[in-house]
Length: 169
Image 1 (tube, rainbow, N blue to C red):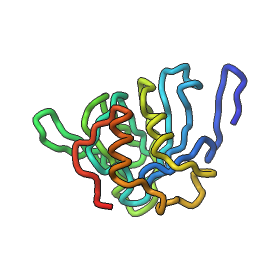
Image 2: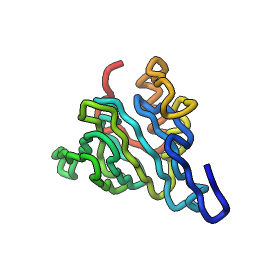
Image 3: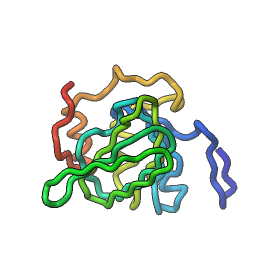
Image 4: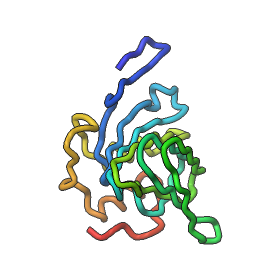
C-alpha cells in the first residue's frame, strides 16, 4: 500500500481480504480513503459463486467484470425477474434498494469490482459475516461458512432484505 495524503494505491492482491458467503471480498478503497464518497471492493468467485439470492441493500452497487462470466439478476416492481449477462469488461449498475443478486456462471474463477455508494452498511456487513484471510489467494475456508439463521440475522442488522430463500445448508 502506498499513500501520501493525496494519493492512495494498492497493488494486485493487496487489501483486507474476507471470505464472505463463499466468495472472497477484498477491500480496495474504504470510506476513510474516499472521504466517505464510496466503498470499492474486489470480489472473487468460484464457478457458481456469488450471492445467488435476491436481496436489497441501501447503497447502489456498480459491478465491473474483470475476469469470468457473470449473471446479474433482479426483479422488477411487478415481480417479473430478469437476467443481465455480464462478461469481461461489462458494467452493470443496480440502484439502491433494488432486488438483485449475481453469480459466476463461467467455468473458471471470476473477479468483479463492486462499488457501493453511499457508504452505509456494506463494510460493516462484510466485516461481521466475513472470515478474515491472510490474502485473497489464501485457501478459502468453506468449512467456516455461517449457518443460514446467522446470515439472515446479519443481513437484517445491516438493513439488507432477503427476498428469497437461501440455499439449503
